[in-house]
Image 1 (cartoon, helix red, strand yellow):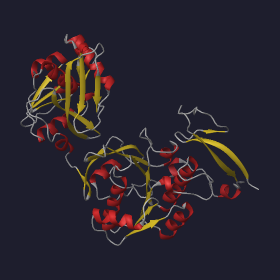
Image 2 (cartoon, rainbow, N blue to C red):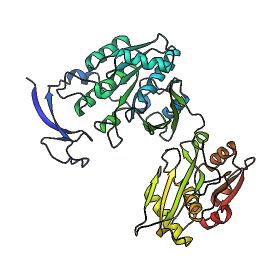
Image 3 (cartoon, one colour):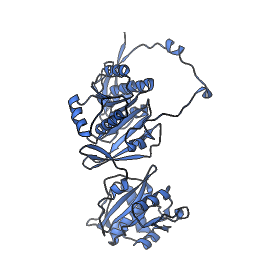
Image 4 (cartoon, rainbow, N blue to C red):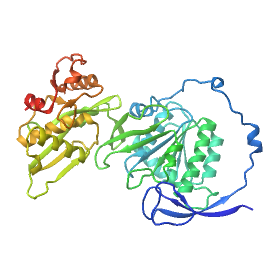
Length: 451
């Protein structure tokens, strides 16, 4: 007889305990341990050992992964060049951000390429999916739908139909009869992910699974879920805004530095081929405290408008707020300005914003934040055709950044005529038609040449 065991799992990190505790020792979260019953079964390994043999490294044959396009170049960029057959991809994001819409459009693109696609939904009925599909566009007949939450039934359907690509929406709705806990629990999510991992690797099927996120912005369930899959993609952005950012945080088949930018429209998601132009749309003319800076996301330069508002504080403790960047970094840069330029920033409130709602944390934005703060403090506007980038140190020096040539070229494409760059990068830069390069060694030089 199988012996039943009662254990307690943390809903946040997957920590396992034999007794209930108020605080999880693993992630230090309160009231996250839930009771689950686990049934232990005897395991026989004799048959498994007969087929297992260690091999040496020279005996292993390697071949180039044959990727196929998703129909979205932005998604292919984040995936590392396309979809890898037999991969397990986790797509996470806030409710209503567009995860299901994105994957439904991917299914439509794959179906147009004569790829056999199976869309399995545990949250919506067939009629609801059809209504959403009609809004997205015309679908071909090679895409099939299934509404089912039973893990055993779903696994058997995949083995029988053998599609080339499968979408599971969502992993938290899958339910296994072998696990006694409720759907969405740690045990159920882990069991379902392990089953789909075996199907993907055993049958060579690409499986996309949708994962809900917690209020902290991480995929609901244990973090082991992210370790089991091949690729983890996060769909970010304010659902009340039009743009969406697809960011890869784990990718066994490519880089995790790339991002894809999409725009949500009535007919679904549309790619934004030039995010710099999109982010700079609506930039005010002749306003102080506004400057254009350049940040790198992987190999793609993105031009952003950095806004700052500095005003005299009415209280003893000035207020500092940053939207889209690190508040501690803003405080550090303001301390540098007060020490190196003798600006009385300690008496002022400061508000820094990256226009468009995008969040960037690259050190190359330091020079843009500094110039925006000084522009607002002195109430002097910066030339609209000027762009800047560079890291600012505690001594007020402007340090070199990587990929400076790509940043300058992107500025030239969008019509900027002046570029404030670190002096350490100036010698290695090639001239760009129509762009004047101005090298600065410290913050004082940057202020003298731009204000």
